[in-house]
Image (cartoon, rainbow, N blue to C red):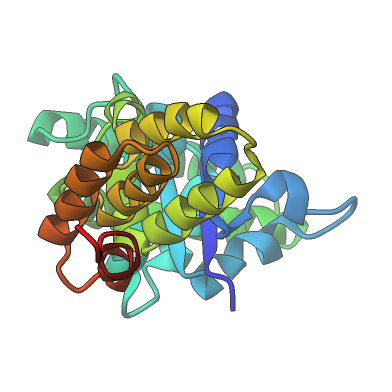
Length: 262
């Protein structure tokens, strides 16, 4: 069964969510986003509550996210899960400040002010005429009482900014959720459609830059070098493959079948 990745974000950060969506699509993991999941007249809250049913939640943390009632609704739903800390994958939008006490207090004050503002306005109407707004008031109260905990949990996580993750091509997250190997194998399998060994060599160099010090990549380079009759290069690559992962059977197969006479 496919793993599911839920992207939680503010619409202000839609362009960043689009980039992440594009990056994760080839990995084979199912990316769940509001723009695809919520149909015309579909329930937004029902969709947001489904965050608890996903394997991982990638959270695009920004000022607009923390100040969004809908985004915080998703987070409160997620915090109901016992293993929520295993699920969350925080990504900090560059420029967002949530780490110092002063920065956290600004958000606590923000939601406190939102609560007082709505509570004051509701005093001007009959309770029975504003039942849905009283539900919203309760929701804001929940955010107000949980925002400190949420910011504490997030700021305690060892995570990276979006720009730094882009430089690393999201490898830390791929490694954490266990899709790196699947993504890599898909790329290596695609080499079969490339006709010339020279073109394969170029593509393998690109893959190596994306997956450095990987036994499977060196094994593929060993095979390609052998097919180019670059025996010494091939021997170097296969030895490097085994050095990185002595248990990797493909490397031994290369050694047994291609180098048995050497």
